[in-house]
Image (cartoon, rainbow, N blue to C red; front, side, top):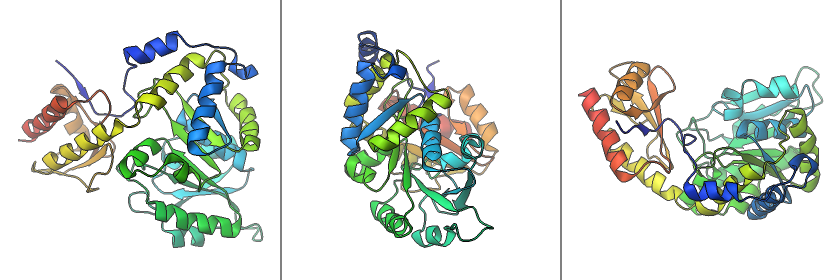
Length: 342
């Protein structure tokens, strides 16, 4: 049985061309700073985002956590939306690794109201409060169903951040999807943030790897925390070569994932017992609300028919489109959903 895996865009396997790039990579020792492939990738990505420097790391979680550690000191606070990855899916990293607490802002689809952001800021003058040291935005937004955070919203939050001298961090694990959906250049998105995290293994098809971007001074400081967190890799040029191939070849094709996700959404909305809570779907993530049976039970039934979709709550499934899913598989996924729920 051919399996259709829509659990995540992280399930992809390197293509033959990507594997050849990895095999042929020139490598050194990245902890010593002399791996030529890593050096080239860091410069290439930093230039694309309009930043001075980049730091190649194993995962998006590590990239975000290094950023938080570099921006803050223990006893401070980070503002983000209540559905943010750094708050929900990084194992309590801010408290464990940086000694800071998260102050979540209630949002719809991950889009923070600038007024709420300003109302939630806290300052050094009040001894009862943990002062705000960082504002974080996630774009696209995972729990928000792949929502693209509007550039106007980011601009408004940036105005508040500048008013109070607070830096901003972008969790741009899927910023590639926002870029291809809107046409807004990557450097324009990045211009509102002191630091940016991007991921090569979500959507772009690399097996491993993320990057933290910022000023040269910021990245030099971040290098120490990468080492402390266990992220110092040696001949990591083999992994950087995969990330470089993904960066150069797999960004524009994300539009295909968006198109299939939109079609999948339209067809699923025709099936009794299913509904899409975040219409219209903007990128490659589809949230599916289930009425008839628990989401976990439906996940199991779909799996038995060759379709893997992830239950993320008792009433909601998440499907994520990626480079291994073609039109025929999308049609088959719709058919399986219809048959299982009939």
